[in-house]
Amino acid sequence: MAAIRNCRNLSKILTVKNKPFINFTRKYEELVDDDLHKVFRDDFLPSQIKYLPNLYPKTKEEWNAAAAYYGLHPDEYKPCDPLRDYSGDYPDLPLISYNAKDPYYPWDYPSTRTNYQEALPLEFQNLLGDRLEYGVRQPIKHWKAALIGWSIFGVFLILFWITPDTNQALLVKQYPGQGKHYTFELNSTYIAEIYVSGNLLPPILAGTLNSFLLHKNCSDPKIETL
Amino acid sequence: MGNTFQIMFSSDPFPKEDTDPTFDPMFGFKGERKKRGKYILFEPGISEEDLIASKVPTNLRDYCAHKYLDYQRCYVKEFPFVTRCHHEVHNYIQCEYDDDVLRAKEYERERRLRLRELRKQKALEAAAA
Image (cartoon, rainbow over all chains, first blue to last red; front, side, top):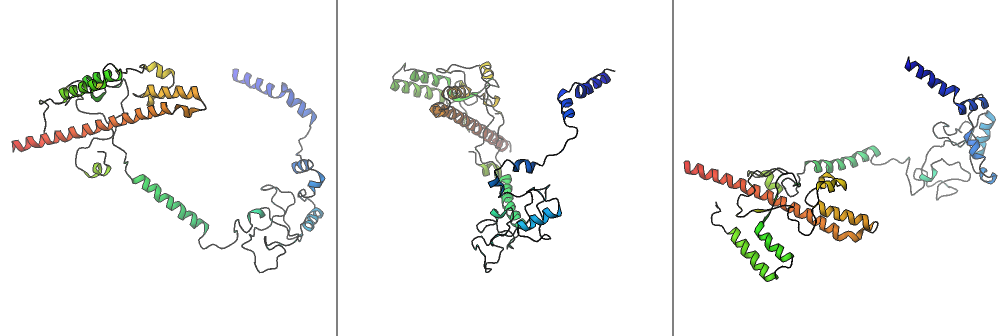
């Protein structure tokens, strides 16, 4: 019962008590999609709109007018896919790079191999002479070149995998409080160090004391040797 | 010492990396070996609580933790001109290096004692035969 009561309350909160929702539905009886292209296009100045693509053509007359504007035949003209890459009435032209075009044709602009008032594809800036040579047959296919590159990388990866660790071999790292740990010095020699570091003895005396203690501790004949 | 290919192809009983020493730590020493970290003279000793309070990662709570704290303290004090802490950082790195040297010495001691065990066994077998 509690769950049903809560559900009822939820519906009340979402519909009856939702004042913004009620006001919105009172004001707008049906939701109409704005043409965003038109909205944003109207923000520009008329001198700028002159250079922007028009809205997507809906009627046959608009279609033919757009084709004439871009200097194309109405059958040849096809605007960009409005769902994939919306660009108004701008035509979806084939990508032909500078290198794929005929160098002996009398182009109006030989540096870009284009003609006067020619409609250019959207990605034209990437198809210039010093950029992508799209449409040119390559000696090695792109997928093959990618495969070669990745296989070289893979060889190094395999080498990295199979080579042994050449670091200095060490025993376990020592942490305070986890077992008893010792240095390779003796307690008695450490006393001499205290004297030196505390300036309690002149260094010459401390050195002799140190060497004496070392000799005393380490030259024990009883240490068995093999 | 630490020769990778020697470890790979030799039949000697090399100890594995990052293992505990198996022999008596006092064996072969006349006097008592100095304990680590107990006789800090000029740096105040720090406790586990200090390390927890200053949020030192557990893998850094080793015998250089006080130097690590020094350099962290300096970083907080001098930020963003942290290059002024190069002495503290150097001290910490040197301490970690010395720690590694000590571990390498322990490894070599372990290796040599294993070889000695092997030699003693062979001598016994030769004597028995």
